[in-house]
Length: 562
Image (cartoon, rainbow, N blue to C red; front, side, top):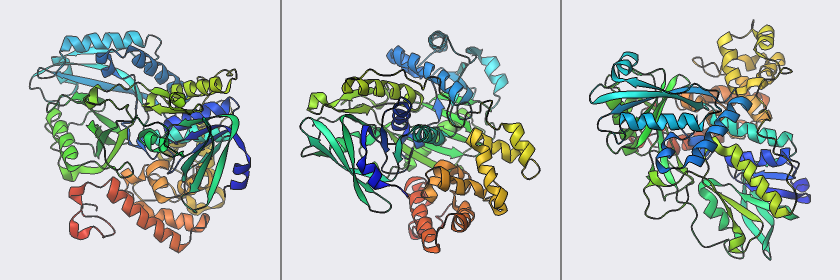
């Protein structure tokens, strides 16, 4: 249970609104430097843009075209830091770029870009690029469409397969350093006294309880709510904070498919023939992640879904690159869509809007202790955190201690004192297959022993949630007891990947609810309520519209799900 009286009696130095990867990164940095920090998220951590990314930790090769060299260099530096501080969650991935005559970039332009990319990552630990003449590319990837092919390029970047868990580890790291972290708590009002915000009104979205969070005399409020930045600014009292629009979000959608005939064992970075938009075909946890689109979005931020047209576009472009794939709508196992919190720039094409982040100081709008983040991406969250906390210290009139996040390992990173693979195998190898233990290490890293230890006194938690996946019931209990999970969506979509791997997660629900009712006190009524909410979430966010027949909209399992 949360101690709201204690929270209300505390005066915080830093109040962070928005628990995506950037807000979590700010909270971690601030807590590690000793600031009294509170992180408030209206839904679950990483439930917004963070959860809907392409899961790449990359330098942004295409940003070179717009001469955003500083952004590329910054991103490449951050990629290196994450490869070292979160090696269990961020790992190298090879990308291949096929080059076609109809593309907007020639073989020699791509080569020049590759050379510049290597120069800007001069201190990298990953291999440098190599160019592939047409015969070599065809030899390596026999299923690639040869029509108008001129050659290709290969290079390395990073991949965060479990992007949500990277956010979660920021949150738990901040919590361990003394921060108060709250998910499912909505800020309903920003209260102002003169030119400062002095407190926040909040509501627990699960219990309905209301309370206030008080700011210390020199406190700073950080708005890292992503696409919701303007909405948070509108909570100011008595008037909105500023009148200018700051966010001009663009929608990005993905599809997840099984391996297909001719599927590559490396990621492909491709230019779509239909509109020259770049997109990725990425191997991901035994499946393939295809995306993303880049479209203006002005709709409901709380219910974003890939349209049928977007799904068809991604299918068609994947089939163009790999003609033997013959992917159809029936092959799409899952879709997801999110909004990039890009700066509002009227008249600009979505792809040409800068991906650099902006720290917007609201002092110019009459509020001297609030900073909003405009933009930001998965790769650069740590740098954002460092910059935000430095800016907060400056506003407080205090000298900022040295930032610790450049070298501080994430909670799941294995050190010499943590139980490594050998120790876990020695203890549990006779009870669990090596494949299952390896699966847990890829998710929890050094915390794997904590998950498996739940099975010592409760053997039923060693059972698999579904027969065809390695996930065990202990993971669901661990999510609730130790990872701030409150709902089935939290467990299936963000603490595990069962939502994408187990028939939209439907197959996993009986096993999870059985474990939670036995070990976490979930009543039959609570389980039923959670299951209903889960079905609604999947239909509204993950299930293609074409797969939901109108007459079956109220069915427990939508049409097309088997």
